[in-house]
Image (cartoon, rainbow, N blue to C red; front, side, top):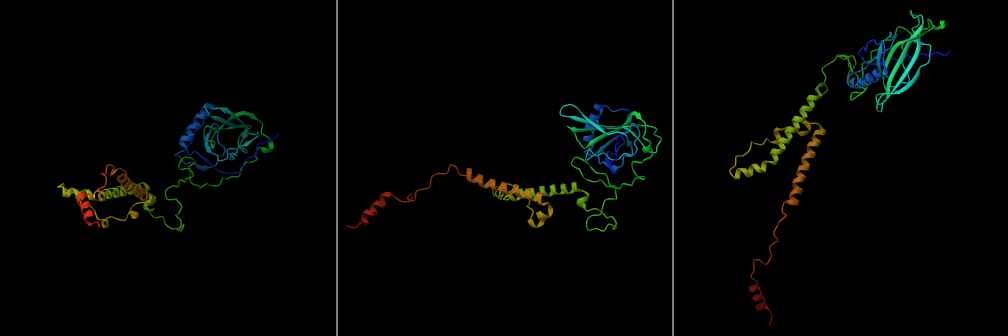
Length: 313
């Protein structure tokens, strides 16, 4: 008889909330939970931890980069894991992995009655999300040589790694508790924590400031372009517009906004100037009259008479 060997000791990424005890999990409910888990995992960081001696009915949601390798859960199984797939709706397929006849060495387990099922949507879902359920199987007698043979070493080592997002726009980002974030580069690790730079503390405020600066530059440019119109308006008796700010009173563009925002502003400005030039060249003087003749200021009869008089005999 061959027995399932324990996997390498390693923690795993677990959904932080306790999913509770469930007597039974149907295939339909497993599909529904996995689809819901894809939505929840977008904004919830997963915590590092060990799975150790889970009770009957316990349900877990974990993230496995390699679904074929399951972490050690503190249970000895006297069986090999089997797997099968079932259709789960349009373009979805649910994979079920099951291993039976498990027991906890050195405990009060008098028979190998523990069963572990794993569910994952390897088609039509996120294949690294795995729903795990521990339940009961028909009991089997425990092999005496394995009764007290532990499958892992105790006590388990403490884990201080911060939670991490496993999917979505924040995938890979770590979430540190307040006051425990690593020191910035170039700062000694023992240095007391100081206030974060304004840009790092509030990027939304920086973006709002950049937008405000860009709007100010747009208004300034509109005033510059309307300067000629203001002067012509004063000649016709119209009231002049508000006084235009001098360039010396406004800060330099590169000091106010980011390179990307400045490039966008200049791009729009240049294209508007080019549009005015080409529009004038294309549509400015379509009905221009023909040029005036160079002889328009002379009398043809007088010219012919002079030519005749001055001709040699």
